[in-house]
Length: 84
Image (tube, rainbow, N blue to C red):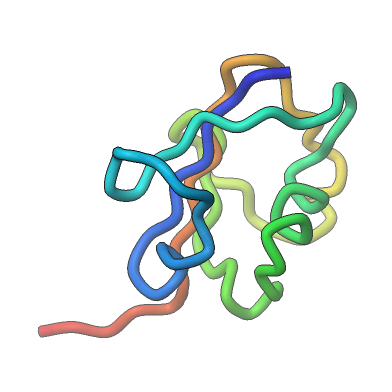
């Protein structure tokens, strides 16, 4: 199924090739959950600090495992960041 992934900051190099800076259209198997997507991109739980699905925060790893993705979903992931 077609969906979108957005990776920010130090995670951006993990994105597949594409024209958009931090967003890619991807295809995943039906029934894929958020945690499986994170693991597919080899992102550790520590690096998946903030995870949103369609703009809604997905808090724990358990929530990520139970949240099944559907076509056209957008998963956005941020690592821990600091700034001033």
